[in-house]
Length: 382
Image 1 (cartoon, rainbow, N blue to C red):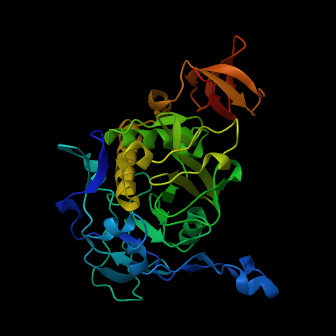
Image 2 (image 1 turned 30 degrees about the vertical axis):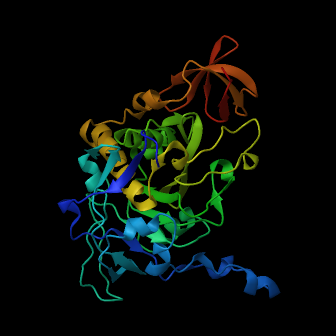
Image 3 (image 1 turned 90 degrees about the vertical axis):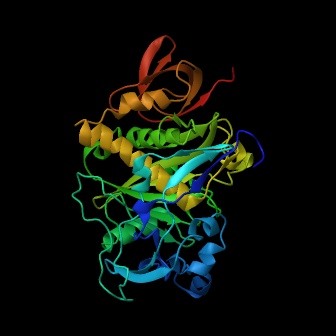
């Protein structure tokens, strides 16, 4: 970009990343289970893949991924759980944010967000276990990242990999695109290539087993963006805003004891206005619209590093999750008039006060304070 305020998430050399895979590639794809395939004469035309095969040469040709993988020396065949993958070797290193005329190092947690080292010489079909086996209460040094091809949803792929023993806690799936991405209330999520479509496995305990899970997750990502100098705000309960436009959203989903966060972040594109719910949704934008240049894998690794740094500081070191007060620092439209849609109070105007301890929204409506547990809000134009 040409603006003097432009900044970009870039690759930088980092000894800490040497020897560790950048990511793992689900190169053979992931077939749909037999029960999910279409019967009858239309079966031949129906998609047969939960995640399409994704060879490295195809990945390098997709928006943003060429830069992400440019520094990779090669790919090593490994088997994780019962799933064959390719380990992308370094070195895609640590991350910094650079502005015109200056550069600043990312926090140390960022360099710890690369996946754990696979056995570099592992032959195809070997039963290696390249992911950290740290206790669930601790933060792994290098959480794994598994990249998959066009898929139904990164959440679907992550659940399948978790069931196969291939996705530990704090591991993530990054999909290059989705055919059936889902947002809040299972609304369709537009998913063209170039953006982040992640499914992140969270511990099925602690704050992520409470009503404050979405607020805690939003706080972690707002804090991570803040380390990049990007002032992301939280639109209650689970959207990410930049200058009053939605640049991302989050969805927490639990299935058979596995807790996943679906996280979408608009890097290069966003839904057009006609695709949004008129009167309910705020405008959408991408980071590129705000003169921020980023690529999926590099930005994801930084955000995970910053988010885990926040989690470690507030839970593992402090002994408790004071995410609500932290989240209030990033909460959008505090003190400002908004319209509440749905929920227990119907469609009516109000004014945001903050958050209560379980993550509910404190709002004044007709002179009385209410706690919202569900619904949506939009700002009243000032």
